[in-house]
Length: 363
Ligand code: GDP
Image (cartoon, rainbow, N blue to C red; front, side, top):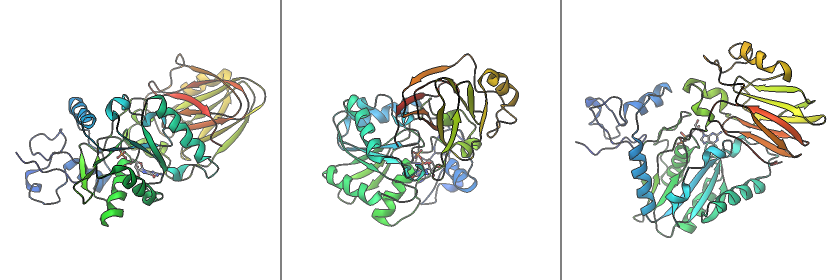
């Protein structure tokens, strides 16, 4: 049995089970830079293969992390904040120092108050008892803020290993590739993709002084919207460039559909303004609240696409109601957020498991 690892995702290479991580045809085993079939297909055809990752293996890995000494770099996707929080993160981290990375800054409009965003993360983590030593805002994709992050890592790591952790799709692999590139000059070693769950095992990158940077597998969180659409439809919901806000002047009694994936209804309050921040590929439709249920049922796979769904994902009996003050953002995990100017009563419908929550506006 070989211990060679796929240089794309870190899974141990094997030639036995095509549906398990690290499968590679026997003929590919001799290649020094071998990548598994899954990474091969992902890289060459942008096509994802379902792999059954044993959740017991995840847990073993996470427990090993708890036992290890080192610095934790926790990556957040600023667009999908809530889902970026790993369940029981404090258990995994123990009393290790934590640097928070806010990734994908390139998609936030310039008007966002980054200081306020960082303050929010600090508040969130301090509530969990996490030892946060610093927070750095970056764009792994655009290579912004990486040097500052490397400096921050070097300041706190004191010759110890560095573990990069985060839920799937926050951009860990892209970041690690940047770190490799900025420290060794090599490019795109690790498989990155818009498909959640790409990185399968610990990948270690030598830092030159006997310590390593480890890319840990992303943990899939049920509340991610990305879990609710087909892999080929992720391109519609994941923004790739700076969000262009769209503002609607609303009276109570109106509903905004964010494609077929969410309905935000204004049910009580004065004339108000709702500003939507979602991928520009998601179309927004305004309709009367009193008709919105039949409108959805008639158009979820017609007027309201993309993405085109086979089944409706909104269930009219599953409604979340919020009383918000003026200057509140309502976040729909993985899809985006709605900034509401004045106090309002709103109803939100989203697919099962997707989280909706509010925060003071970031603008
Ligand atoms: P991982 O699952 O956390 O390892 O995430 P990946 O590195 O595979 O990235 C997931 C998706 O997010 C891919 O489509 C990346 O191109 C995208 N992504 C990663 N970093 C950034 C970033 O800084 N900005 C933007 N806009 N997208 C990013």
